Image (cartoon, rainbow, N blue to C red):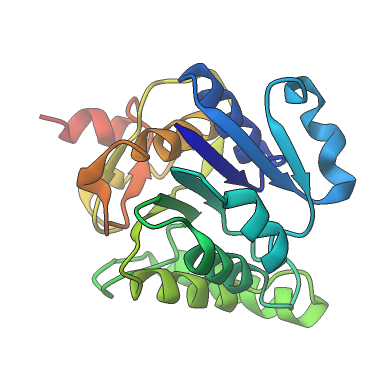
Length: 226
């Protein structure tokens, strides 16, 4: 399988690169030119394409011939970065390719997620401060996911909980709605978030799903797994 990882130089992206290589996949990584050095440990094993991840020509080149595309939807700046990236992937991905996108729990597909009031305030505050200082654009990540959800492509949007570093605990568990008891612990190892993303490439049960995930060894997961 040939896969493209968009946002390969970030923490999540590098974990995905390693998981993909462990599975024997051929990997193309996209990252900003100034971040290419972060992938030096993989440079002899992957193809690196430098460029802005919302540059349509960069994305078109990177995902050509790929069986799967793993995309980190980054809400940086105020230039429609997330929606630009998502739209380019949707427009240029080969027919039938598996498209896996990452975002946070704040994204909702059907409006049935239940969030604590403190979580709602935190998202609103982050969105307001992000726009004020022109550093993040959370509303654009929402728009990116709206476009993905409306697409007929073979997509999955993986919604991550709070993250921590540490050794892998195994494949996270998931549920369709934030607020479900199994997700109560709200914590996942970043390396396992990446594992779920890569595993989703070959899990057709996740097509047109927006799984909210949590670590498989967290108290809520252990309490509610069958």
